[in-house]
Image 1 (cartoon, rainbow, N blue to C red):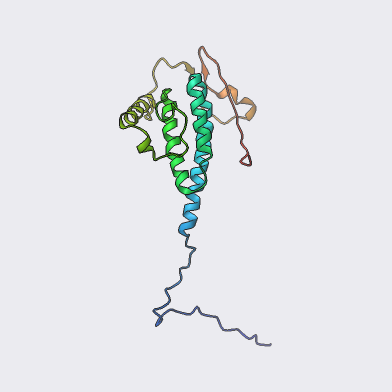
Image 2: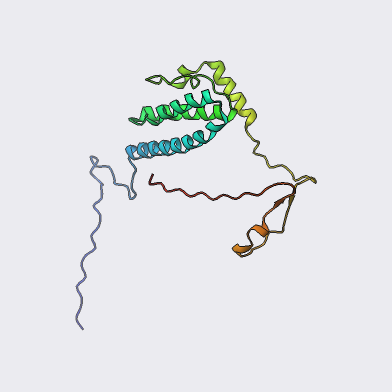
Length: 190
């Protein structure tokens, strides 16, 4: 039988005795730049989602308010040149959504958007800011689940596994109402 030659195992060079080189980690370290890119990408995705929500909520506003909010949405959509603009846009969009939730448009969104935006804390008077936050808290639904009452209007069927063709049969039915199901799909390539 022939003996196979075994090659020696290469050992990683150690950094002992070499204070000028730090030890290399065994895992990938993310750069701060990658984190900033992900943060910016997240803010952009958040803005586009919120802008679609805001455009849907425009229907509940008066014609005059609708016009000014549309101008603001267009202005905010154009603010994507640098990270500071994106962060500022995020603040304004958040505040605009709070106003849309309360169905009451206040400054700065009740007028034409200025050419250059200042930070939100400088653009909105303190009393307006507090009022919007208070109204928003009043219109927000509570998170705690309510205990079922005896006057439920839904007929509950027992939960069980069933074929898709029997989907509607296993859903709650309102006593005097309508059931509407909607499916929406999105392609992120728009």
